[in-house]
Image 1 (cartoon, helix red, strand yellow):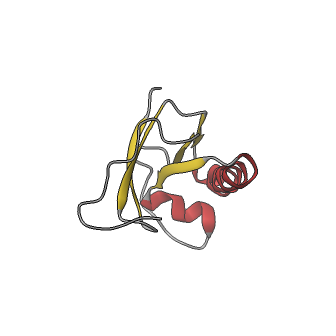
Image 2 (cartoon, helix red, strand yellow):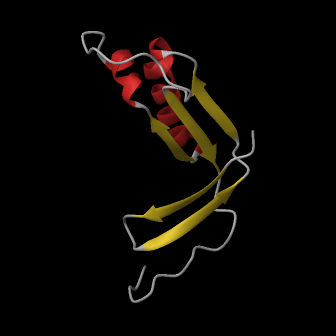
Amino acid sequence: MPAQALIRDAGCPRWLAFDEPVTVLEAADAGQVRAVITEAEGRARSDGLYDVGFLTYEAAAGLDPKLAVRAPGRLPPAWFALFGAPARPPIPPRRATCR
């Protein structure tokens, strides 16, 4: 599945663009959520990748089984694309200076 992302860099007010992820991690159900998050974080740290993804409301049951959530929707409870360096030069900020 092709994935692209445009992410605001909170450390420096600029935007980073990403194309063609190295890999995509997806939890098929709430029971896989914790493993997907752990793998995404581990790969980002060990391989120097950028994580871009989301958790749905239903992912909460995978983090704490005591939490009651509604029936799963159409989206996977956890989804992360891992990217290398930004694909294009960062979009420059309007008035900020980045180091």
